[in-house]
Image 1 (cartoon, one colour):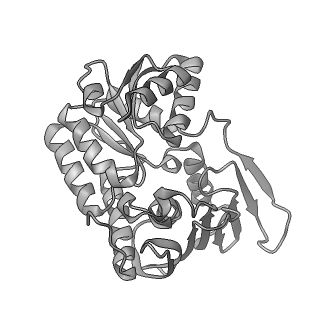
Image 2 (tube, one colour; image 1 turned 90 degrees about the horizontal axis):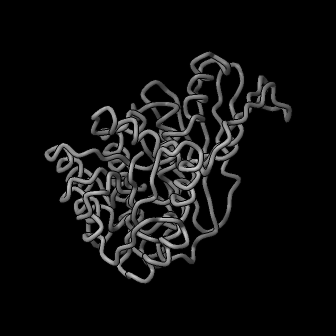
Length: 329
């Protein structure tokens, strides 16, 4: 059993707490050990409501507790680098919510420090760890749709009014919150050999991206057409088109069904493959961390450090193309 602490008490921390309770009930693999917020009363309320043993009104005080064996960082993107460095100061292994940091410079600094201190750290982009990832890869590798040559993926939610979306100081915008998923989907299917990246963007008055369309052209001629939207909901679908059919995923952010079509123009799939039942979907990243820590590894194979940096570089390049700058850049 591993003692897990959560740094930050926002909405995503609630989802992780639910996940950990489910894991504890299922196989006693985790202990809901501690939670910290800048407001001690908020942390205490969170701990009582979610079933944690300890509550701290200071991040640093929690990290001084030698019972902490893995920290889930659940604060805004803008604060990830600062809070991960604090975890590393006390040699605490880290599962850091996506986007890993606000920019690639911060990502490199954090990962360099983790390597120097020989402390485990990984990015919590949950779709990288889900069984659906392997299922999609295996279906494509088996030639179910022939040679994959095109893909489309979109992700949109009506979240324009949320501070984490429109505030530059919180590393706001659709890209780091939503675009990171479609970019990762493309990377997981087509790899990293991008020859050209083009995009169009619509900005908020605050100077961060409201939505973007991105086209990636690969060295082998494949292409990915990606959309991230923060001002309306989309169907969140992904489609991989091949020479012998296509594969459709119902939700790029949390796949539940994979459908295969021999004829992409047909409404009737040849096969429908459900993904395994899950607690929330976050459990897979936690299990991966547990395995890595048990094996003495410093990263997870599902999301290697090199890939985290590469994705941050891609998003930095997009922001540079748009003239979009964060205060901490």
